Length: 320
Image 1: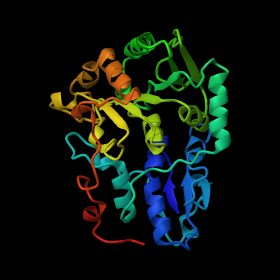
Image 2: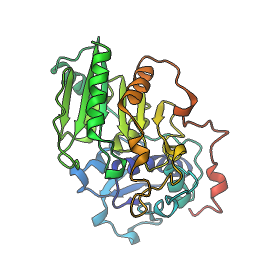
Image 3: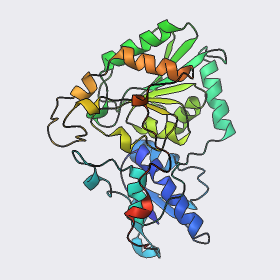
Image 4: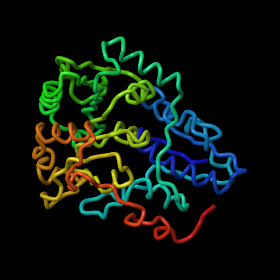
């Protein structure tokens, strides 16, 4: 049993390489994943739907450790490593290290059905979006306010994008749990409000680009290998995007002495890291990514296998 009793959608997705590694090594084991069924109406279990390496997803509240030969909790192995000025280690590696397995494949797993993909296409078509449009999905909020960019800058970015090309259409994902409720309606843009994660993924699969913060949608897009532009503030993109060649990052951490600070008490730079990022720059990066143009190296945090921190070096011994 692997247990992630609380946490976000992105965290669950980042445990999927560990799931695969365990199941591939112990092919005859029965692998159960225990998680919080109450989080966002079952969103954590939903992102594991169809995962070929999981035999059963269960409610962690109903699990007893004694029912399993091996029980590994993946609930809090990352917090101690995400402190100010910490070296960038991806949560994918931290989960694997905690489970004491070696990852040969660090890609995340998200399984979508053709029916879901078709639903996403139909949802867009009902809103006047067709195959001739360039569709951008925007997720403006993260689960923590420090990782969320100014909504006024998001609104300006949407305007710049739709004004730059008459064929661009923007879909903005919002939820009642967002820390701020604003009017996102603009010309050539549509709001997707209070939809489930699998419905959002189905629409995302029918878009050309995702723009987001360090949030659940970032990791979902990465798991789908979807072209993405990510706006980063207090967290370290070198520990979030280094395994994702299709993700471009806008971040000014190299100009902030306290970066990355994560969530260490009062913000030491008053979110200067976020305030330095402007709508025009995000728009420029997004358009280059949308049109397949080469981006300057400063927006690329991907590292090849030779450059990555090896999980083998992080593991003293194997537990299983």
